[in-house]
Length: 387
Image (cartoon, rainbow, N blue to C red; front, top):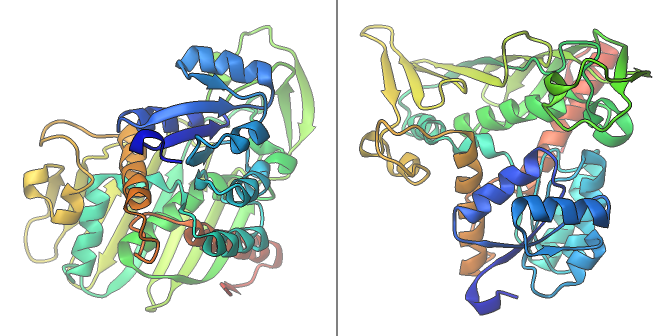
């Protein structure tokens, strides 16, 4: 391991998100040594496209390679648990896409196994890593907002608006029993807990599937490419059991209340996460479509907009900013910033230190909340989060 003192990375799953991981890895000067895919043929094809040195014939072959230090798991949701477990047993550090697993029981097993093996484990809640989100967290920690009263917002997309839109996430066998909440709602929930430092203790949820039958293209479709399908594409009808929309009420541990709307059928919203955190002294809000701006609300003086500028940020915000003021940072930069913290932690080789990135434990907590959301929607009752 640590060939020539440098980390060597392997990536499994090269759909939409895998190449985003690879771009972030390379921007730090870390080598992506090899990749694995569903088939050896597909791995070779992707390796050629992305200029990766090694295309493994299987994921198992990747894990047997002693050169690989870290594995990035970017495969469909149902593969996360078996692939992460195999990687831990093979002695590899892991960066895993969310959701960590399909069930909280599986996630808890991974948390315990990673602890037993003393291996670094991270989950890709990358949306924390916009500089102004770290700044909002710093403001909460300084008590600039006062006691948090209300946490509200939404996560909206439109890529599944039409009944002819299809993706593997719509299949419960591959994506799990929750879709919009697990895929994007989980990011919002993790982000507001990260910023406020408050745990969710209870939820009440209403879920809706607007298209119980969708038309699946017979040919393979990658994430977010629905609009690029030719007019002559052939379809087959498929039943859909996962939610297109969710409305969720939250109770936080300090008595604060929250509300979230999640939709993958909101026309014109390509990928918009919005939150507002209202406290006794001030409020902050952020919109991912304007990711370098943090709105700060006041009662007795003019409101403010803080535009990302390292010279104006706290040490925490500055640490995840790469460019000077006026030079925007966006979605690809969040991968780099998360990975930078993970790789630095691995290089320090002090696993007693508290990680400064989201870990498998965060993924486990996220799944506990998601399971409570599902139960609430089925029973029309408030459901407590029980660890």
